[in-house]
Length: 264
Image (cartoon, rainbow, N blue to C red; front, side, top):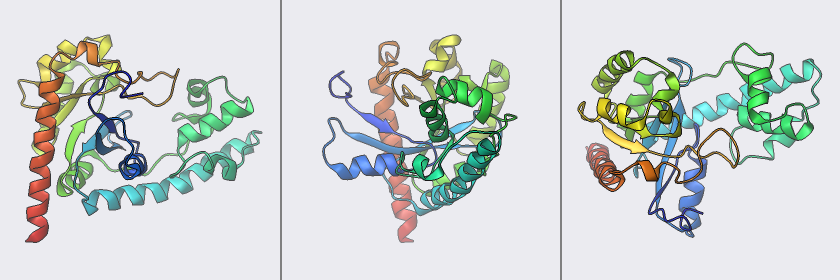
């Protein structure tokens, strides 16, 4: 699909796992070159996620992600038990068969839709799997400072994902960006479907003067859900070639720094 719609690159940043990008990188049959990465869910506030892009095989980040995956296994089982207690016939083994990696809420939501317990993924989350709902179990997550430390120590480039999903006033977002930049945050995902509410240009006017890398993405999960379709932000992203080039340079710099530190 990526090659068919004219994309030059694609990035795979699954939530809290490298499984997707690692599997594609190993397949050797990609239609376009791959940017490898991961998207970390953070505990500081609801909807706060950190993207990590890179080419290094940094162990601190991969170790942290493996630990999160192990914790998610127990969390998913606990959520299924809560849902079974209120009458939903869900089988944890069947849900595990639908994924290569640790089970998360989307996998449980899909099982609920297949069983007819929810009309859609959004319905499953809204009624059963979001905080405060009967099937929800809180996840073990890093905070922003811990995540930035692991990402930078591993030779990756840290980018704030979809800041508009935080639904913060611009001045409050600016204050947080200033704080996180001092911790090592290097980029902001400006061109994301959620930014259409305020206009990507308004967010871009905030972050470029602060010296952040500007990135973008569809946040594609699957067809016909609330996320964007592959390549959907490209028509609005007039400086995409320049910005992607800057990201690649930052990735090279981070890898060189990681390689140098690994040898000393």
